[in-house]
Image 1: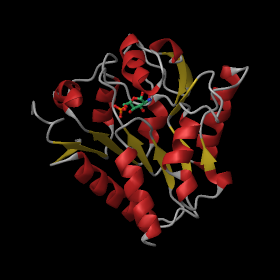
Image 2: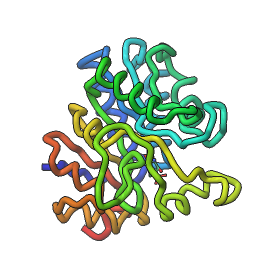
Image 3: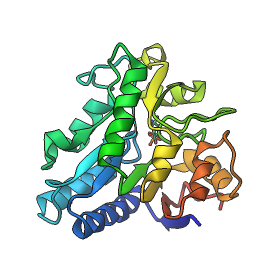
Image 4: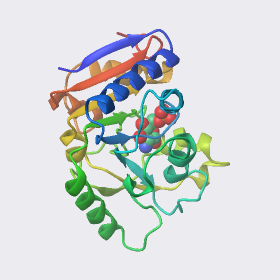
Amino acid sequence: MIKWHIEKSPNEVAVKAAMIYRQQIMDKPQSVLGFATGSTPELFYRELIMLYQDRQLSFKECKSFNLDEYCGLNPSHRQSYHYYMEEKLFKHVDFDDGHIYLPHGNVDDYHRECKRYDALLIEHGPIDIQLLGIGRNGHIGFNEPNDVLIPSTHVVHLDDKTIKDNARFFSCEDLVPKSAITMGLKTIQQSNKILLLATGPEKAEILKALRSEKISTQLPASFLHLHADVTIICDESAAKHF
Ligand code: GLP
């Protein structure tokens, strides 16, 4: 059963989520933390940084794994997820650089990169708590709606809707990469706990569909219904159709 929490504002969503991560790290300082990108978790990362600065948590012994990365972007590219994580979280806190893992988007051999990432996840995993956002089309990570879904790390062709949604981060839509490397649903499902955050009225339709408890490859997030420990925290505007 997914546990749903509705908070008044995106800020309250972020505070609640940060408290869950804090508790996880207090219970297990060597936690393997799963992180996500996009606009939604930005406030959450700000909260984590504040807790760190207040000495309420330390990432020294933690490891981190990210869900995905655009194909073709160098880590120094301002729209890469490497850059995002560095700017939004890593450079502000005390993670050991050797404990930070993201898939690389700037490789010659994507098949090999997917295998490398899966091997790291097996070596260091399972992830203790995985943060997720949700695309307006129901994607998690970059697992896009499709007739079939691929369980392990793979390269995915991005949905037109995703390209349009993410164009706001680029100077024009043509510059949005057409493909990405993403953890598959199996790896996401193998996380001990999953925490999905959704804010804003543009997520209301997809959350309503997710509430219906039907599972479909056309709504990749619906596979979360099969997991034993999923919490979704959303704000009132994202929950307006409940
Ligand atoms: C991106 C990421 C997802 C994220 C989603 C929603 O494309 N790959 O991990 O959850 O889209 O992003 P946002 O929070 O900006 O709506």
